[in-house]
Length: 144
Image 1 (tube, rainbow, N blue to C red):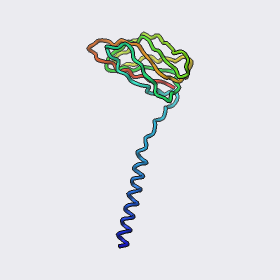
Image 2: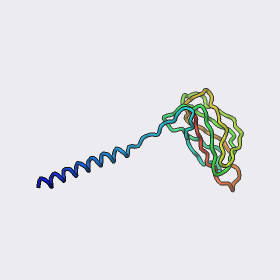
Image 3: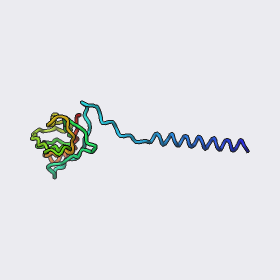
Image 4: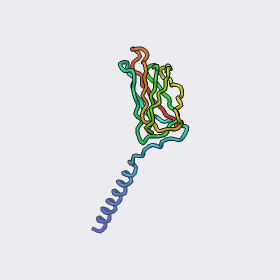
């Protein structure tokens, strides 16, 4: 009788330890923000033929960035203008661009005004190239 009780208690204790270990392994950690000088994904949108501009809202907590660039997949795109809004309540920065980004290509690196500043949103005006090419997926990266 004591031997059976001992085995049941030992099994229950081992089960509790196993469950506690399994729960500890499922903790979701927020990824590191990235080191200075590295590119960080800010967001992606699908540029449709029926639209002429889109915006990417930078998710908080807002982080400091010095530069941005765009990567385009699935279809070429011409980018005309950017409006970058910062978290410091200053006037948005309007950046006149006029560059063609080929399918699978990247824009030039765009330096932001004032050095390292907290971004809130990036709005951009564009034209997709050719109706038969489909929509262009535009991904924005920021460098700290």
